[in-house]
Length: 133
Image (cartoon, rainbow, N blue to C red; front, side, top):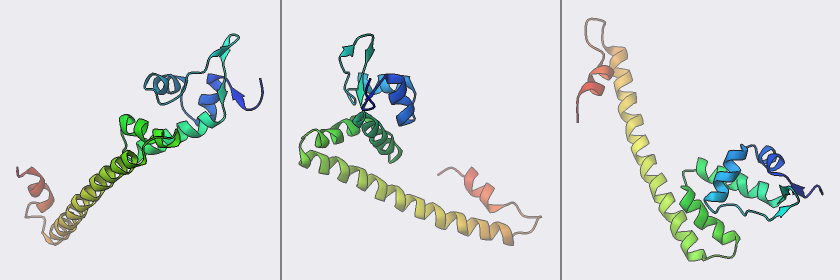
């Protein structure tokens, strides 16, 4: 076996995932399933980078379906579709940031109020979180 070819165990180790993850990605059509060579399937080194891309995209909030579509770009797919998917994710992130900024302002205010409230008054943080919207 050449250094460029990896067994599934070595592939998983190099990509820092479990063998089950490799198999799951194959089931989801995110990774190729190479033909068996003897008793083992041999994976190209490039599959390690593909797995790392998948994991990083998941960390950024992309679903596996979206990642599958993004991978089509690398495989010669439709750039317009890739831009659309990425733009949708960007809009979701921007909306989440607006919500987080709002939460930050409210919590800063509540922390300051709680700090200023004496022990004979209820903490406004607890009160604010128990009031239903």
